[in-house]
Length: 198
Image (tube, rainbow, N blue to C red; front, top):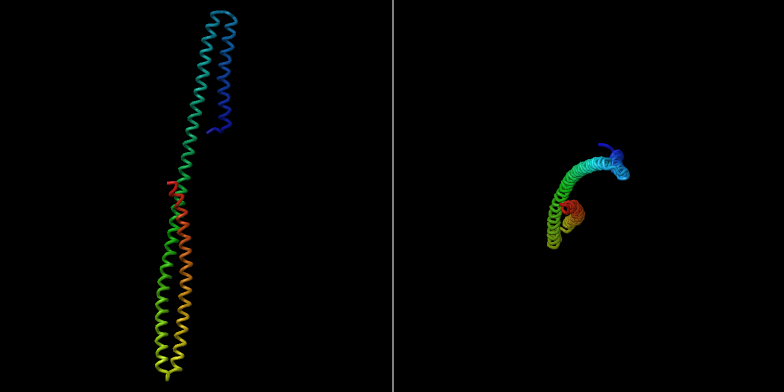
């Protein structure tokens, strides 16, 4: 395909040739009219018609060529835009898949942590029940006070550790929920422009 400057030069040349033909026809006709010769005027008129027809043909050819080049350029641009759109669509699908995978993993981790929190809460409740039972036994059996005091102390430590662990697990659960919400909002933001364009 020729460069725009070459096409512009060819068009200028073609239009200049067409304009020169029309000017030549006009000069010949004016010269024939001034000569006042019927034969010369008739020949000049026929020549003017032929030159005008040639100029019209050159102009028409230029117009057809311009339209074909324009149509070919628009078709090429449309193909490039289609390729770009397909690439963006493919990238969007890959991104959405990756984000869905990350959200799934986060949800699985949240589920596991929630299960661990529930189990820890159960253990904490059990520890609290044991603590209460040990306290009742201590009241009932003061004779075994020293042994029960040690057992009570151990139970309290386990209960405190369980409460601390439950608190830590709840904090981790909150962090994972926050990350999950962020990932969901990123996924929604990524799919929203696609849905709006669709």
